[in-house]
Length: 169
Image (cartoon, rainbow, N blue to C red; front, side, top):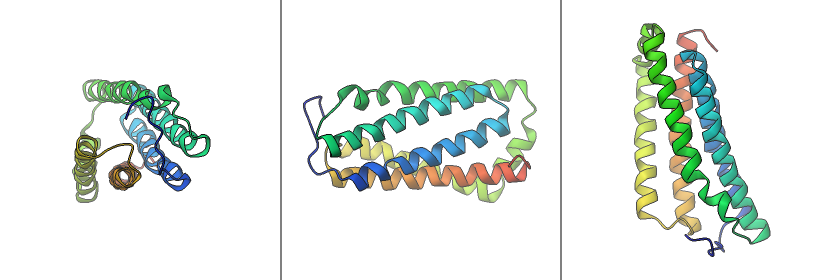
């Protein structure tokens, strides 16, 4: 996809469905920041959430306005890595500053562990989709969004489980 490409077969349903994994991830980040007591994880999660919602806005504009607002498309290439970097730094700092024993005990319980593994598998699927599928093709986008929704849903379930074990939520 380039700045002159305006996907023709995107639908409003696809654009709106794109918000589902973004919302799931945002909720999971809120819980993760709370259980790790990390402001950096929260800030990184907000940056990722904002980048994801801007991409949703881009898709809505493509569908409704038949325009490709290129900065809304490419901003994810900056926003997502920046947000994830902040989250990773926040997590590492939390591991050094806080006693994370209860967190690790909660994460290693069967339910959160299985859903974290499923989330990682889903994210690996997203990487495969990004490298193999044409992002301007609506069918490819649906595949990517279902994969992303499954991954972020699994991540949210894992964080909800961890939070409930730690009595944080």
